[in-house]
Structures are given as C-alpha cells and as structure tokens.
Image (cartoon, rainbow, N blue to C red; front, top):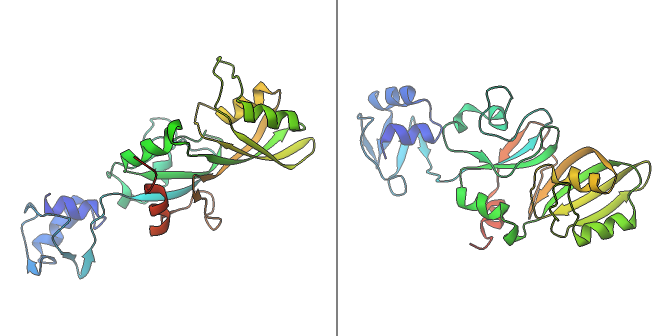
Length: 238
C-alpha cells in the first residue's frame, strides 16, 4: 500500500495533507525518514510514525451510533441526510456502511463498520442474532399478542416471520414493550404490530446480539467499539 494512502486511511489527514507531511520529513517508516509519499509499505508489519505519533494499522473499524430520527440508514443519498453524514471526516472513504437498517423515524443502536463478512453474519437469519427493540404501542398489548410473536406473524405480503419474543413492560392505552426478532424485513416490527391491529408510535433499537447501546451516547453521537465488544461480535461463527 502507498504510504500516503495508508496515512490518509488511518485519519492522519487528506491525501494532500499527508503528502506534505511526508515531503517535510515528518514521517518515519521503521525508524527511517521517508520523503516519497508513493513508497510502498506493509501496514501489518511496518512501524509508521507521523508527526511524532505512532500510527496503528486497523483493517476494520467498528462504530456504535445512537441513530436519531430523521436520518436514513444508507451510505449516500441525493435528498436525505444519511448516518454517514453524522461521522467525522476521518471516517470517510473507508468503506464504512450501516449493518442493517433502521427506519428513518426509528432511533437507537446502529453498527457502522467496513467489515463486510461480519455484517453479513450479523444480518443472516440463520445465525439467529436477535435485535432488541423498545417500543410504544397505540393500544393494549395482550398475552394473545405475545403468543402470536412466538408463533410468527403473517405479514401483509404473505410472509410469515420467524418466531420472536414480546415482553410487556407497561400496560395501558399506550403500551410499552420489548421486542426481540432475528430478522430485518422492511418495517418489520411496525408491520408485525399492524397485523395485530396495533400501531407502533415510537421505536428504538437497544441491542444487537450481545452489543448493547451505550446509555451515555446521546442521539446522533457515536463511539468506536471497545475491544471486548468487538470480540463478542466477531466470535459469531463463520
């Protein structure tokens, strides 16, 4: 990999900025000053120091975002603001994408990464990675609704969902519930309740497998995953 590309990918600046740093003698590779931005390096092996700071190579990036309503789960869109627009520019051009999709008006946990194989495993129904949601429902949620979730619900397009789990947190004209499903069909939670004659008025994802939304993250905020969080995610079987 070219030295300037590596430095830019690791967030040391734009390509033009890192080229200037290299030509200025502020970058060393294995202890030697190199002034050629195009020199080839081996990121996994070479020790790079840029402007006095060691640059650690990371093949994959994992970000936990507390998605706000009003942005879409996409990498780009000509009309709508996307979740990638919430990120610092240092994360641009790294192939980061949202793992799965939250509706525009849905809040909560969204994993952003450039680890394609992991994203595929997390979304595969065969892996049974359950997504957990907190929801407020217009209407009384009953034990019959819980049984319907356990059996799988026939949606408006004729598809029957895989079994899920519905926990009633608070009963009332607007019920509070927790929903766990291992699929991610379009508007699935909303359509499941709609099939039961009820409407979701608020929806927030709070967990994805063992990854739990950090309560310290405000809407629109994000952070990189801790090593133990990455380990729990990446140990999902191939």
